[in-house]
Length: 324
Image (cartoon, rainbow, N blue to C red; front, side, top):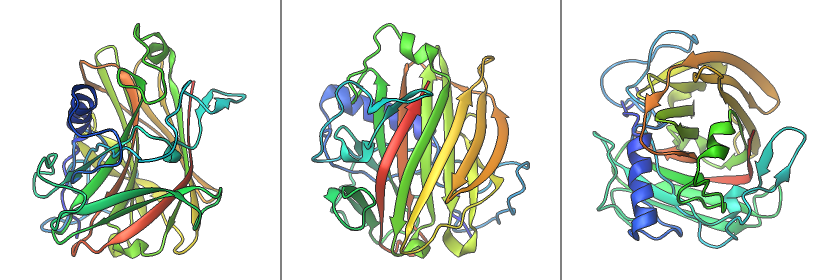
């Protein structure tokens, strides 16, 4: 069964933003335990309740998606200028896994609120983010994300503030014009795991906060117990819902995932598609946004612990984010 994790991404984001701008934890590699927050979160359900098979329609599974913060990678250059180049469609921020400015947070059951007392070297939850890894790598420079500990169903989330106040890409957008003009997003990354069965879920989130509205596009690949499907966040990022998209990542090999979403012209969240290893699942699912008092664009990456909090590592490479 899966552990019910609330979706607490936005709360995690606000906390990470406060830290980033008020000098709390450093914006280099660090972590805290990740728990479901008001942003896309992992949805493990360890006790009580069952999970419906993915059908792309019926309600949330395993509580709310847990949100996250992110650890800031140590080493690597922090993007200056905000992009790795402009393509035929949109502007791409390239190789974000190599850059600085990430923040990390831990989240512990049962509440999955941010754990102020947790540390990367803790016993109940521990984690690390190691950049500049030459192997395994598709580019010669990957980043290794590891979690472990002894408290079951604990999570770690890494967050990067890309556009808006606290931007790691030199895009503070003081008049909010870039944010307001941006409606389309692509999260594109390669990931590699040697013990994928120890992962409850892997989560990839895109978040936009604009004009009082909170757009949280949460996506998590459920792996534990042979679930192997994608969840998406619903109810303003409050719950997880199984989609019709299968998620069967390869062990000891590179997996390529591309997620496409849109803020529609009438301010709806549109989950467009998920492509894993060349197989595209078209979702075309709409949700209403939540509310916020902040403006900006962020991304998250999160790893969820299983029933025994078995240690595992994931390597990310070629993490590119495109917006237009």
